[in-house]
Length: 240
Image (cartoon, rainbow, N blue to C red; front, side, top):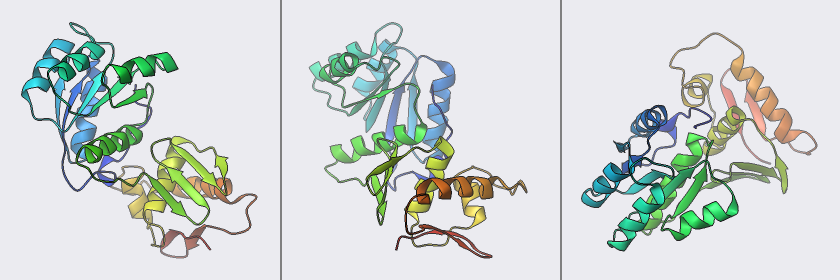
């Protein structure tokens, strides 16, 4: 289960990836295919383990996203079979089984990463990007910093001066977008399109409310403000 809809276009890499999704839940599979496509990637679907195994062996994929519990052939068997035949395509395992032993079993079967359900698509996409770039021998930036404020896309955590700050999913996406554009003026239209996925102005105070809540969480108890309102223009995240 995906816990939020991300504006994938803002998170996409410059280079398109070819991704195979092996997932038997139709709603989840269709959502992932659409979300990856919106992020500029080429996603293929397989709805059972046997079909996924055949596609993975015969296709030239950058990353495989594999559900653990699959009909015909379970996900770990698919991965183990691929590894036994020398296929080293990076694999991200999706599973509702999140205990330490479950994750260890998945990784030892040949998985490169393990994400438990429910999850946010923004985190899934970030992890897929990491696997792809790692396979290509490239470094990837997954942490954003502005002064003593730090956001980690993979762990989905925010800290300021070492103190962890709990944010709701929309607040996290809002802060991530602002930190990606730190030092720049971010307009209301930019936020509507990239955080709320609106391509029109709904004429509500939704942005003002969320910015106010976010500002309270990241500034309360700290000496210096980091989220500034630029009158008549928008907002700017700037430390110091």
